[in-house]
Every structure is written in C-alpha cells, then in structure tokens.
Image 1 (cartoon, rainbow, N blue to C red):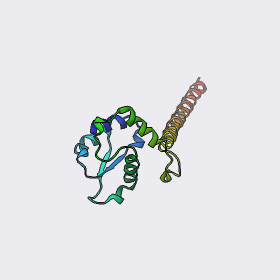
Image 2 (image 1 turned 180 degrees about the vertical axis):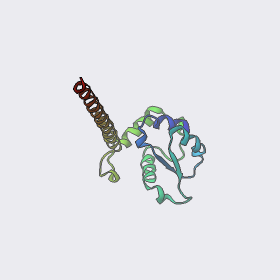
Image 3 (image 1 turned 90 degrees about the horizontal axis):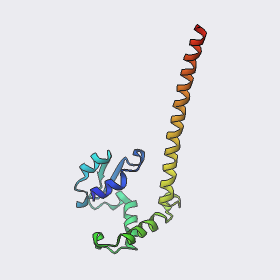
Image 4 (image 1 turned 90 degrees about the vertical axis):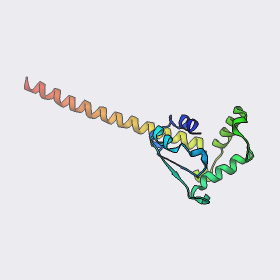
Length: 142
C-alpha cells in the first residue's frame, strides 16, 4: 500500500500533499516511511469514529457501487479498476460545489503553476531593475 501511495502522490506539488488521514487499519502500518518519502504528516482517526473522515466514508460507499466489500483488489482487472477510478473522479460531488474531483484537481494544479510562474516573473523583474540601476550608475560615473 505504501509503495503504491508514494508512487501516486509523489508527482503532486508539495502544496497539495501536506497531510493524510486514515483509520487504524493495518494497511497503514508503514505510515512513518510514507511520511518520510513524501514529506507529509499522517494522522489517524479515533477508533469507531467514522464522522472524523466523512469524505472517505462517502467515497467508500461510492466504490462499493462498483466493487463489493471483501474483494481482493490484487486479483481485480487493472483496466476495470482504472475505469472505476475515472468514473468516480469525473462524478460531480456536493462537497466540491458540484465540481468533479478531477476538474477540481486540475484547477488547483493550474493555479499553483500560475502562481509559481508569476512569482518567477516578479523575481525576474526585480533582477532586471536592480541590474538596470547598477548599469545606470556605472554609466553616470563614466
């Protein structure tokens, strides 16, 4: 589980992978390694407290529409699992003001990219201004 999760999340910008919250299942036994691999904090819900992770519980219910409880995902067809993931990620959600998870993620990625680009442009403008001033002072001294 840890390896697959690390592989899936390592390409996300750091701004989008700050924390993970899990129940106390054995699938997160290697959570410390996951924290180190991704530079994130992992939190655990209190036992028998599903309200602490309501969005996860909702997602579990949606997944059960496609995959019955108890199915061994290691034996499942990867193509089918990919179709399930795409179906769930393109389904509008009330919690996202009826946006889709995929659309919401893409919007966040674009915003982060634009903010980084504008920051670089700002730094470049300051650099040019400082060099221009320095060059102007040199010309005046001549």
